[in-house]
Length: 247
Image 1: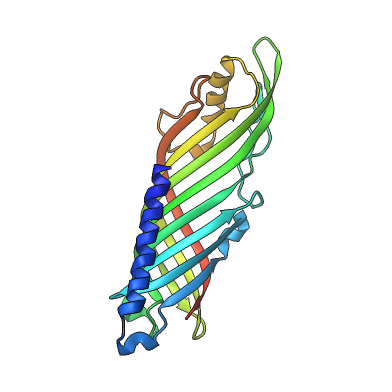
Image 2: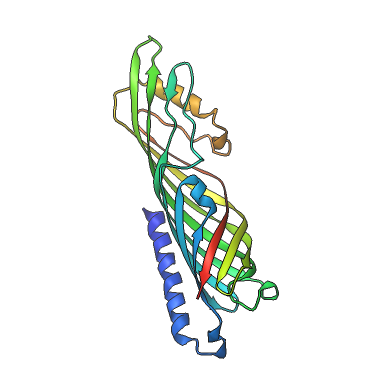
């Protein structure tokens, strides 16, 4: 929650800066568009529906605030665990995400507009996801146990981005976020809804080590019967394609 509060405060700063700029800028350049509403196209493949608002602030800098919802549908999902003692269903997750950004546009690459051309910038991103993990566990004495977990995942990431915004018409742009490398803090929580033997957690942690998606985590990533939470830091990466309308 502390990470979320920090991001929300920063978001309010962005919005306040945009509003102040609108009220105080009376130069002839006001005739140029300084606002854009965009929809993230590429993320729809993963069941994410995100809208962003971008506002020109000052001297080729803009502020952006994106808000999105992640449904259970999508091409990207986590495959289930399939080991001798643990077998689970595929993992489908849903939730929301919020992403404030600061961008700097290279003026000599724009097409007479504040909001197109090559850009670089910084971003913050907070994601809050929920899911379920169901399956079966066979203990060492061959006793079967049903697995029913509620899972929560909070991700706070920060990074650098570069991209190019291509003007299509007077009011339409296509935004290609080419690369957005960064680092993320991951906070997992597993809520157990069934009684399980202590040995399950050793087998479960061993099974998680086989996931290539977790190759970058540190050795502290482990669950136990008394502590069903784990935190770790890992490399993160953003990319995307969005269609925007300027005004």
